[in-house]
Length: 418
Image (cartoon, rainbow, N blue to C red):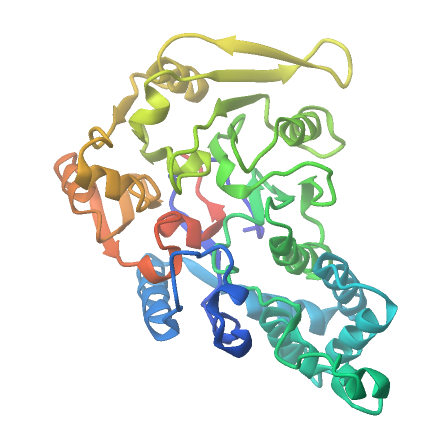
């Protein structure tokens, strides 16, 4: 079995990448939570013990289903041990995406990272970020006039912020077929998460030969939550607030005309509404069985879907606007019989408004009809149970605060075909 193979979202999950939240979530300058977590303006802290318990519950479910669970920090440390070139390339990319101003501060940050005594320590420093106090720029003899004039550097302030959202592993990298996309994240700081995975993709002996369908140095944004594999020949991509049309253009040309051996012939582009914290296609559409999808009514009401195929001229594409219901679109895309669409009712109902905003459609399919779901979504889970699905409820509230469900915390690397 190779290291990556995903042609659908329901085949038995055999290998997955995760990241257990760590000390990087506890680094607050002067106790100021929002300096470290600017994307959580409604929160005042991050309960690491609770988050780790949640994550352990999730990985326990995966292990019980014989999924090979790979921790991102372990994989990165293995990469740095196996390839001396990986360390320099990764530090260069990390510092570039940290946007540190000027030669002196950049070199101070570089010296701090390069002084790591082991690969494991370097990985910890990359995740935990770099404070001025971690470097020698706070030493009075380095910048004595700055110290005397009251302009010394604050040891608590970050030169490079911590990677405290890295447990959302589905966003930075995606697997399509036997290749991967290294995504260009909407929030710039999260591109350092991609840098870490790019080091693995380029230098780890198990992944170095993997075909790459998208380069995260692309000018345009693409995030993994907007990529949903349908079958070996079809993939759905969300045109959303996080993924740009130009990025999808780049991806389509690579899949349809690139030098790699892509089997993709049809790319279905879904226009994704933004409602609250539902940002990506996978928060509106989830396939849960051979013939069954869970659909958020907000995208089913007036679906807007394009199909992109290779054009007649080399390098060109043909774009068709699709009419008809989502049932018909999915049936034709999958080349199967009747398709069943489930929804959990109107989000105008107060309970379902909460559950849609709490990752109700963000369940993780372990195998057809076998789902890991958010335990707080009691109405959605009851409907899934009545529909004959096998459920494995876990709580992920501390980690996700509603920005996705279990699927956002697990990157499938290998699934069986269906």
